Length: 153
Image 1 (cartoon, rainbow, N blue to C red):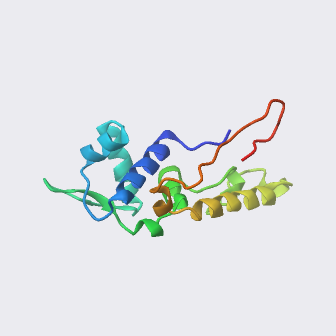
Image 2: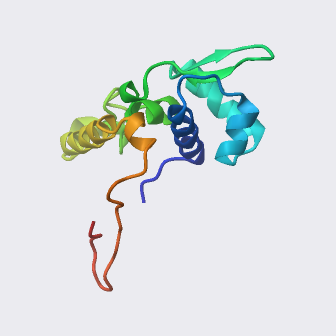
């Protein structure tokens, strides 16, 4: 199974929360409570997102966090890259840093993994934070039939 880390999941929830009211500053404790994570965890994720340039922070008693760009200009690829690093399914397949495998010169599937990683990155880049911040019109139901090896969407 390919899955994102817990901090990236929290980061996505935090960014979605901020996108719903992107014009005002949000205190870290407010964000933590709204998303349902501990304050230390929220602070860690918020600082990482701010270092990546996705959030702006203001210090002080009336400080807090807000998005650095409009929600329409921030993609899932941006969020995942900030919290996980380059998007790629294998060492040789990362879109930004190809070639981290010592078997690369003789690998017969490297190019295909790079194609797949690019497709995943492109799909993530096609989903904006603005889209994530509104409920889906048509929810996706994932079902699997007994004996079926593929998941039907």
